[in-house]
Length: 165
Image (cartoon, rainbow, N blue to C red; front, side, top):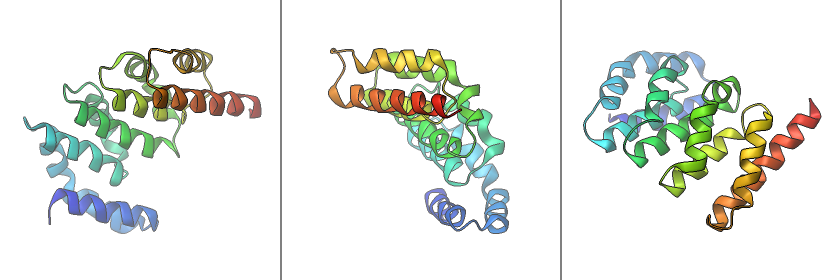
């Protein structure tokens, strides 16, 4: 079985809340994920970072954070996808990486990476700096419409979350 196949199977187990089987898969695939994340091939790194989220591998958060700084937009995007997935239940993950996410959302050279960073930020706490950043992005006419709309929705979600607390 390939890492991609194992990650898909792990995602299915996570959805089913089959924690024992998922923990067993994590133990089996731990070394392969580490090796792929250290590969010189960006496709292997992207696969590894994406697998961390599919495996809900919280012990690999530091490795995932390194993925946010990867040279490859594909690897950064995969790391962001995993962070977004895992932060749905653990907003502290976003809060721990807030400054890096602010940087990615505001200035990454890849529009998809910027959008994914914004999607991650919506899962964090309703920090005023984040809301201000997102509102600024939503009003920036030099950005593409999809990126502005994503920022606008995320800012609105965080503002609403802040009022609820």
